Each structure stands twice: as structure tokens, then as C-alpha cells.
Length: 420
Image (cartoon, rainbow, N blue to C red; front, side, top):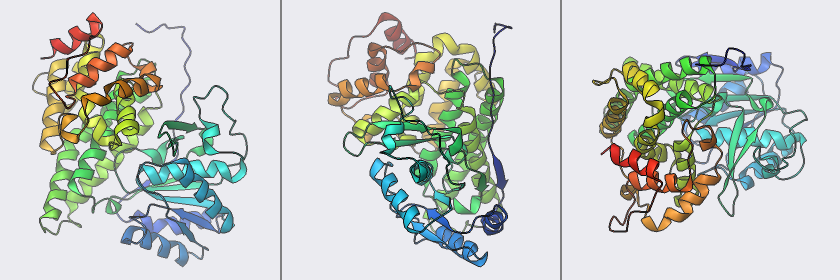
């Protein structure tokens, strides 16, 4: 039972416009906010495509002086942030309009810091011993996600990696929250099935881990459960539509397709709102896999999710049973929820083991080292040791299966074996 004398502080995000075609409203919204010289921030692949070109046209038609920075690719790194800040200065920009996936949105938020703050962006790592403060003005940010995964559009942080070590750093400030968010499902209909599936599992993992996190935040809990429900209902449909497009079907304007994509955008946003409560062991594992093995974050979450749930089942069975009820699992129990997750992952065509994506047993020591240093697991409902991380990664099916199984603490080993 929660201590009735405990104090907690809640905060929720920003103005959101949702609906097919709402990108057409961005220009008017920018003018209404007093913006005159926005810098569009996007990634290399998206810059020449219709979503970005349409945004440029909408802004120009509203009488805005627009420039575009598109040197974002892969996992965002500090050098991209620095280049973006230079582009902002060169355009004499007064604002940032970010369009793209989580990488573009995170770079946009991080480069906004450097507009009026000095130093390297990694100097502002929120988990450093003495991070530089974000205490000066940050230019207005508008955000238009083109993937339904990270929910970065409603986040107050940006995850930026070091160019050399690939270590992930978190840049955090309430000032990084976008002033306006536009959720337009038409911006996501061209996503391939594999990307739709992986980003969707990222959103689902945010909902799951935030609901299980040990912090007290009932508002986040409610949002996490609804986001989870939406993922269960609409992620398979979104992937199926994407597969249909790959086979030549014309479903880009299909109402059911747009609805499924739109609900996934809402689910991703809800997951990001919910995880202000915090995350857990699965994200620490996923961050390690991105750092050590350059694995896509959403795919890493999808593979690690069942193993992380098995680890937490001994202390979070009640909450996992509630999640099973929310998604309509046949068995409303912790085991039933894990089986539901595994079935969903198979339905949307994602691999079930680390071996299937080339992660070898030889990477285990480094994976454990990076995961243990990651802050997310400190909010996990069950404490996680180095031995526990080893057992969780092994449970997720590392390559080189003939390698000896690492020793683990009895509690962790029992958790893994008990799920078999």
C-alpha cells in the first residue's frame, strides 16, 4: 500500500493537433506563435520525400523564411547536434520545426540547447556528475513525428551518443518540450513493415516498462495502460497494411490504414508521456545493444521484452496480470501476458532472439557493462545486478549457443528457469 503521507509531483505535456492532413496547419500555427525564420530539422532519407517537401511548401505559403538541416542519420550523435546548431546560426533562425523519427526529433531538441548555451552537447548529460545547467533561453520547437515509436515529440529529453564511444547520454530539461505537436498519420503511411513493427514495439515497451516502474504516478499508469491497449489493437493492422503496400496494394489513403497509423501515433505519444514515471531493465538492455551491437532501439526492445518480463515476474505479477487483461490475453496472468507479447512479436514478423540479429555470446561482457551503467534499470521494480543482466541477455538467446551458460545469482537464475 502506498504511504498516504508521501508527496509526489506530476507534470504533463503540450499542445497536440491530431488528424490526417494536419501538417497543412503548421504554417498558420507558426505565424500565430510569432515565428518568422524556422529551421526544419530532418534526416537525410526524409529530406527529399513528399512529407518534408510538403512541410516546406506549407511554411513558405505562410510567408515564412525557411531553411532545412538534414544531416541526421542513424543513431543521433554529438557531431550532428553541433552541425545543426551551426545551421541554425547560419540561417539566423528563430525556431525549429522537427520532422522525422526519434533521431531527427532528438537532434532538434539537443541542438536547441546549443543555440544559447556554450560547450559540447554532451557536457549537458543529465546523469553526469556535474552536468552543465540548461538555464538559458531555448528557441521554440514544433514537432512532427513520422514514426510511431519513441514519442520524442512529447519528451523533455534527447538521447545523444558520443561519436567515438557510442555511449548514450541524456540531455534533459523541461525547456526542451515542444510548444506544438502535430500527429498526422499521413506522414507514417509509407513506413515499411519492419520499421512499423520495430517502432511499434518501442512504443509498447515504453507503456509496459513505465507501468511496471517502481515510482508512484497513477496518471502515468492510466496512460500507459491505454497506450498498451492501442498497441495491441492497431500494431498488427498497421504492419499488415505496410506489407500490403510492399506487395503493390494501394492502401495509402485507406481509412482503416490511416486510423491504425493514427492510433499508433497516439500510442507512441502516450508511451512517452507515461515514461516520465521512468523505465526499467528492458531499456537498459536495449541501450546496451544499440551501443555495443548497433541494434535498432525498437528491435532491441522487442527482443528483450519477454526476457525482461520474466525477470520481473516474481515482483510484478499483479501488474502484469492487469496488462494481460487490458490486451485481452487468453490467460490473465503474468505468464499469459508474456505469451501474448511473444505471439504479437511473431505476428508482426520480428525475430525472437539476439542470435537472429547477429548478437554473439562474445559481446556479453561488454553488454552487461554498458547495461549496468545505464540509469533506466535503477527504476526497475526488481533490483538488477551484473549477474542478473548476464542471465537476462542469455535468456534472450545470444548467438554461439554452445558457449557455457554464465553463472547468475540464484534469484535471477530461478526467474529465468521458471519461465521455461
